[in-house]
Length: 450
Image (cartoon, rainbow, N blue to C red):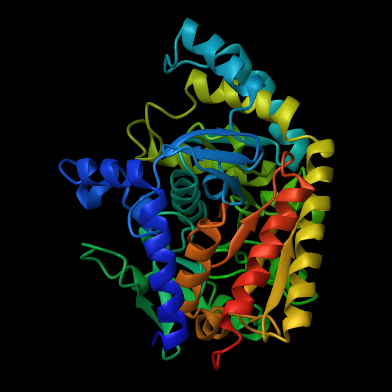
């Protein structure tokens, strides 16, 4: 329930937003004529604004909208632009490849180098491409079931791994249940997906012990229900238990690539059997990759032989197109560098320190969590250890008010909970402006009982 203080803040901020975004308001009316929900993709309407902000351009870590307003961008397209908007080296590579063709359903010269780069960076020897992390995770799950002969997979309550039906399962009264968002699904995918709390090794072992789980699909740090950091020793226990029970470990690094050049996989020594990565790998061009160990590659080859030729139902004609390979090559060689990560990590540390100063000075029951270049402001202290605890901290009225308050002060954070991302181009002054805006918001709340 939104109390009187939040209601007053929201009313003021909505009025302020509407007055300062006349061009976006006009475009919002026009797009309603032909786009479902008034936007090309319905998530674009998930911001806290009365109507969508229409973007004009982005450069580095700043975005300009159609009304000429400039924002410090800590959303960065929810990761695809993690290394910055409008990167010249990426634009040049894309223009060069586009002038020679965007796709042939044949490999290009870039394929050999990109494969080597992926193996060297992430440690898995064999790779395939996809168009999105959703596609990559879906393919990985299918192969895991094929090579193990097991029907079950396991995910963690509160997870999100793209629009993969098998993963739209949550815990309800301790049992697996379909998420309400699984629109139009007529099959009970919960019958083939186990779901448990994150950070609970006993529950993990109990779920794996029957020997029917093909793979565990996990983010090293949960980032899609509010950031949830693993307990000390949890990831090591996850790897040990999956090996003990013959279950493949599938690590989704689509968000946790913020950890470092090799993602959490290298930073934490995770040793996954399968690795998936989307969004940032091609600088915002729709593309993803998934890699496997040598042992799993052998098992996949045997499974393929037993199936015989024909459609596998995995992959599309757009996968591995020339444009995405060109983008991946330049990202891996010139953009996703140790130097870039050094700047990002330093900026994230500055942001966390600033937020914690505000929390301490205002005596707020909040916390700030960091995963590499990714930061989360959590309305709870200590930070939740699983999704059940996090749901209690996700005050949607407070979230909406904070997000709109920040937008009106020229700051964008991801529209989903309070996730923030620092790019190599994010200036200290922008970080300080974000911290100051959060402080101003906290001051506006001081007369309430929150």
